[in-house]
Length: 402
Image 1 (cartoon, rainbow, N blue to C red):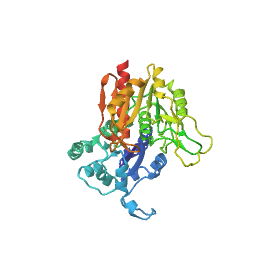
Image 2 (image 1 turned 180 degrees about the vertical axis):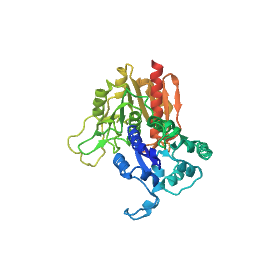
Image 3 (image 1 turned 135 degrees about the vertical axis):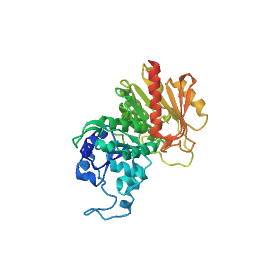
Image 4 (image 1 turned 90 degrees about the vertical axis):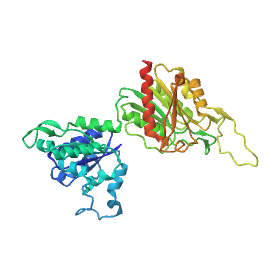
């Protein structure tokens, strides 16, 4: 997930470097935005070295910078649209006043007005400034608009006074960021095996049977599980998806290859989530040479591929097993039948004929079918949100089985 870190002009600006590292440990991509005053305390080069990214310091081109163009003129809009959260730390009395009154006279204040992402501010200032009615009224206005505030700590301040105003501890700020972004560590110590993408079954050296799976759902589950602290193994059929950072990736092609990889890793797994669209049939005998075009029809003899989920269920133990079902009709009936026949703990089904729930989409509309006749229908949401809801239910199943 990507966040913008706004650094403003106070003595605590040097602590923002430590904050960047703490945020990166949460697997967050940090884009730093500095005010002019902040650059009097810390150089942009410091943050560029830490993040490996350009540090934004002005809404307009500065001396020595590349000339202004359309891209630079609307950069604040581009950043506003791609971030998941805006964090301003330290937040001075000046910046709080500008945010409260909608003043947009630099990149950071303009970004605040342009983004729809959640906003967190961590104030830091002299105790008298912190207690001033104007500052408290500005904070009240921001809170009323939904801005989250991480209150400063009390202690000895740089000005020599003692009281509230010291930038909150890194742990408190990072905790608030994780809370707002929905990042949790409730899968720490667990191993999760996820399958994703299609499998391919060869007809001859140049042709094969496969399906339209893009792997997006399985990759989202792997990413969500890794963010929540799990050790994740992703067994993936052919797809162009980027492997989530920190995930153990095992590329496969055929159903047999996926079967071997899953069985190899499932023994030490606490949770196995079979999100791959595995080919149900393969040629009974693949041709060793290319099949030539003839005059008449060609009949293919197909045989069923191994049922990996059912095989895992026969040696299930305390492991949680989740299957996926892509349906085009009678979704509930088919999902229930699959749940009982496979011996899984849950089947996540979607009707791929629905808009926003088909192949290669960024959203999904699913229903989770559970043992005992329970079902949980979810509205259309992003696949990463679906992934987290599935993992929430997996944890609930684990809790109930203890």
